[in-house]
Image (cartoon, rainbow, N blue to C red):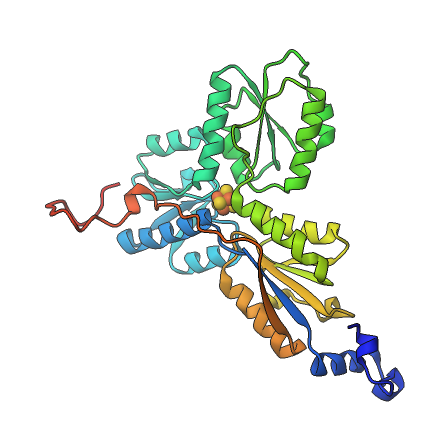
Length: 353
Ligand code: SF4
């Protein structure tokens, strides 16, 4: 049903005075439909990192240091900052001997070494799926391969992965970069990808790599993680039914950016917003169905705030749509796991680092 055919005959702009009143009539009487996508929001890696930081606060209190943002979400970072966690971009800012957590995006061996040199008590909250890419980089480099990493320059994860074998890895961001690579069809070549890329864009770049370098080999299992793939697939399927796509997440969140991009590629109005305060009423002109989703680092409360706003202001009704079930869980870093209660122990109650 479109706005025009939903309105009674008498509902002309003459009767309503303006298009705005006309829309208000429609929303009041018929409402906007929200399709709430599932899976959305926190992935297993983000859950592990956030729970790990919670646990570290519980065990050690502050001062507690975080190297980079624990996950790329302003609300998550702000909440922990307000609770006394200090976020740093340089380990030199961490006092010797202090406790520092490495974020879900991972760090390079150089950063680990620096932490040891400064006698920091480091706790590694790197997502295991990022660690998998690091390990692949090390294995390929040790085997004499030149590695082409498909990713976004400057992203924390890319910096960490490239740091595993800096002499052997070159970054490509697009097909133009592939064309400019200095290798030949004789070069021993492998490719890896960042975990949070657009599945379609990454495939196009990999296809271009394979076309130019038929000898290139890839990882045994693809690097774009399950959470990235599932959230993108949900948008690809569900956005067909929507006029507007709203993605909760921060601008520096790669996987959230990709979700909004998919919406735009499908010809929809699509916006990446940190929270409901960024919603603009003119986005809703002519809109009957809104797809709401959230990047892997966006907390569920920002989604629920948005849904409440749409219910209140656009008489919205919610339809939950699940395209896949997720049941992936990652264990906390070993230093933060609860002590086993089954076996009697005389160990000190404060876990060692
Ligand atoms: S988006 Fe994927 S790789 Fe990144 S933290 Fe989540 S599960 Fe790990």
